[in-house]
Image 1 (tube, rainbow, N blue to C red):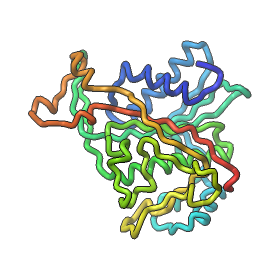
Image 2: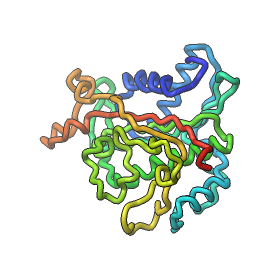
Image 3: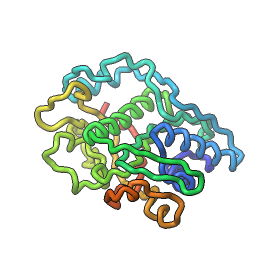
Image 4: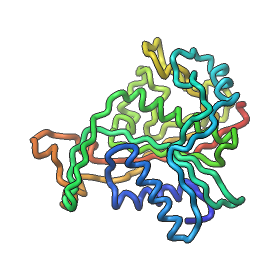
Length: 279
């Protein structure tokens, strides 16, 4: 691996991983597999790397109080009301960087629609659930961005990246999201931009629910200081894997028709770059 750990390096690892693991059982399975692939790539280059899963970081800082105040959102039974001293990060990496050792944090999301496949070579079955609550998935994705910005500003990590993987086209395609939906400001679809209007106005960076929200959690707005643009790329096409006889479609055997989009996994990577201009 090159000296600098960056978005292109992650894409290369993801592309390699997709050849052996076009589908995962769960987010934990994805997390472990990605961490293992990163370690293997470093070892090929004979470079040292240390990787930890679910490492605790200090998330208790002025930053959370700042964003609550600036976004002027109510706090009602929200997870950010809890003690933030021991927040966990999915993958924590210590690697060589351009300026010496770097601490890198990765936050992953794995969102699925229903699939039932069997590996034709070893008989392993993959039973994926049809996860609902698109609004909460989008909210949690941006919340990871917010947390990573916070960790960078506190110098808990030097770099941060979010990696989202899904076969749910409702999350990816902006044309499938109603502008009147309450979670419109939290959408994570292809081409979505946050803070790209060359302005420091808080409205550009403060993500809020639309209208009157009847919910008991995830009430607070999310504040991200950086500028971001979401791009989704192909990860794996399971129809191709089925056609190559690498996988067996267990749903097809029941005569149930599934949209072709459900067999297409895509991923998106955001490099987290908080801006101190807004703080």
